Length: 304
Image 1 (spheres, rainbow, N blue to C red):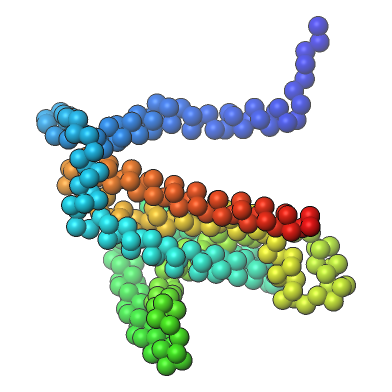
Image 2 (spheres, rainbow, N blue to C red):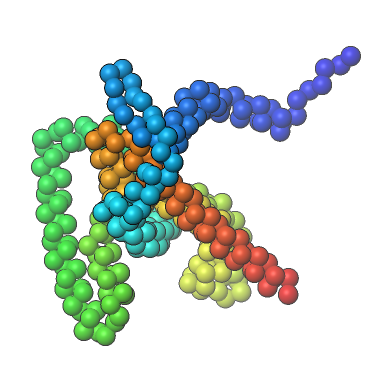
């Protein structure tokens, strides 16, 4: 009997399973146990003892505490959700703008791309630890904080100008927030920029040539060709930016959870973590729901 040969698709699937095999082992034997233990902490009163801890079932007591008695948790949740409305649009627009610039042809393009991606490398945990332990780097960070103070002073002038123009309070606060946190927001565009750059390079030049022959301007090409062709990656970047914003170590909720773990209040910290996790899931579900409804309406309009 002849042995059946593997097709290319099956070979790719087999190689893919081999590559993710370490993740399967780590998830089943390490991560899954931690998930179960943290979930058990939510409904228990945890008491530390030499060599371990004791758990006593208390039901919904921990969840009730963080939502009704904790003085900061609800306030931090509202602050996190508010910052999400500011950060996500700015990061998406800025990363798309940078990707379009870096997709054009000019000398030193590879070097400039590396410079724009450099904050992603610097923001990793090991590099930041080295920077924080470096006296010279610490002085540079202190200087950058002084620059942020100057930006805040400039944003006050921008706020006054917008108020004199008769704009609403919400619009004024939105632009003043962007002006005050511009450095931090631009720092977070590296991954999104790379994703957009890959999407732009996958667009066939024939589409732009056909639209140019029809007399379309560069502005019309952007809205009629670039945006529709990169729409799937826009959704990917929106989801990534939402998760990145929610899980940022500088996030007020994340700081509070970390402080509870530091104080060995594992039950309440776990309750906060799971409640926060469910909130992130609800936000992502809403984004995906709105995106699917938008795609369906566009398909119906196209068929009509």
